[in-house]
Length: 302
Length: 307
Image (cartoon, rainbow over all chains, first blue to last red):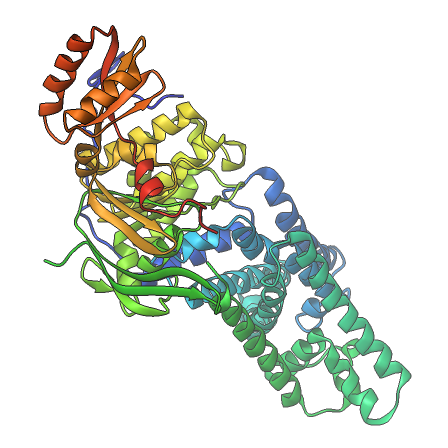
């Protein structure tokens, strides 16, 4: 396909002539680095849900989001049909019960955000623009955190509106539920930030998407299993501290500390550790993993 | 107004053994500049230093008066870069990708879309621009790479081997595109290539580097003028003619059935004509054989090819 000669202007068409004005320079506004980072953030957030990509790329993120929502929707529907029936889900335990869903989403989408840029050398293009390497890392971290927040807050909102809509007096129910908004919005934040940092820190290490996916699954599942087994099989201090091996326990403890009651089977209560310990661990995960991501991109050759 | 690109004793070493750039000092004025050298001569390293992607080991460099070490981010806003290797995500369309890159260069969203349509048309991508890049031919990918480099209307274009991997037809189209981009749009352009023929075709100024050292920096025309050779093709008697011309004080040598005569000015033409007439030789062809740029490397450069 040869480039069309711009000299052949005007081109006649049914509706008139199209004049090729040739090349024009750009004299408009040039936004700076901040706009570049924001653009990268929003593009990455869209990529996390496969927006602007093929249908195949949407399948996994949307499928996982659906899996996250369905139990909440079913619970809401059941309580509408059977008034007063106790739902197995509430704001306290929903995210804890969803941990496999988080792990799957991270395993599938964290590599989507960063591995491809590395593998296809898009990074060298990014770094040849105004944005700094740390900007790239921070934009990707925030995009993945925002995606996880969406994933977590969607079922929480279903629970919230489900319980409002089934009641006879909507306004009264809304009034009752407003107090829970801190849980509905806060718990997803507590989960999204450390999990996205940890997932991205693993994914940033390899341009091979499959390796990244496997490693993320392994880290989340193995830590959860090892923590639970050690807590069960040992006694004393080892048993008390063992659950902290799983990042999800740290998150549940943090949520418990800041927002409300812990989940019975998370091991937070059983450990009898002071709750700020969990908060400290969650913060440490977010900071160390986030710093590792920044460090990784600072060091990478372009 | 300072030079477009200026380097002073610029040196880049990788580790303690590999010297990519060695005490390079040059001043470049706007135009289409060919940066020529064998693979590994230091072309890519120089471009990356100019972009602020790599730090120099010693020495300094400025682009449009800005220092590459301290003002890298500002330089990168005004520069378009086409890397040598593949750099395109396969799962995104050319439109989405180029517009994304436009936004990363600081264009507002609407302007990025508008400019994307314009530059994709300029590089000759039409309906296929809505399909994922993964399905493109090498030629189309190179066009997308050029489009993303000019989407923000840069003041300087750095093209690293823009014809990499293209077939002869694709190469011609790409060179034509580079030439048009440089001349019609008035964007100063540096084209790095190991193919001298390409540089000769599109560039007005030549920087030849070899093993990280500057071999020569001059307008292309000066190379051609000073290396002009007259090729005299005969049916036979080439040795005879060569001897006669040497006797007449010309720099001539037989080369097969031809005699190559150095022509620093017009005088040799008459001498050659008279000599052929005197000797009664039959002339097959008389042509101005312009030395190829290769001669630059053959005579002054190393012959073993860089690492």
